[in-house]
Image 1: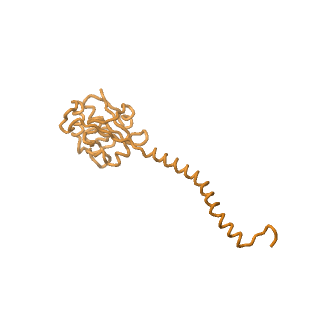
Image 2: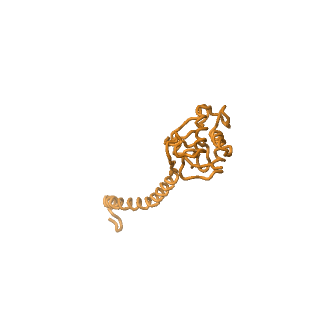
Image 3: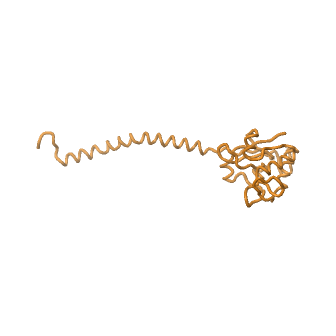
Length: 189
């Protein structure tokens, strides 16, 4: 054999012995940036998935109005009177309501004038941390409200849900509402 050459079987053995350490070194080098990327991705996704909780406080049964101001009782009574009214886009009369029209009508009963759309209402009113019966609940995505309802107590809201439906009561524990909740407001005169 010439100097500097190795038999064929020896080179395979050497390569096989070196391959695992080379492979593991290569994997460790590739894994560190991969792990960093994965960690950053998980943090980003965790930030995107955090939902604002719908926090409510019921001072008493909303049905009989215990511990509620007369204004709150009147707002909820006006909304209840609209139950079964057909949804009408842009509607704000007993012939038909959309969500913001229903809210305008109910608050109009106590002399409070609100902007026309749910997004305008959301941006015009001061947000509160805890909703009480008679307060407004806003839903949408980002900073754009696309829906509004009136909190009625017992984790229920009254709202005009959409085309082909009527003003109705809905549970706040439905996943859709939990995922799209933006905040609450308590309009005052």
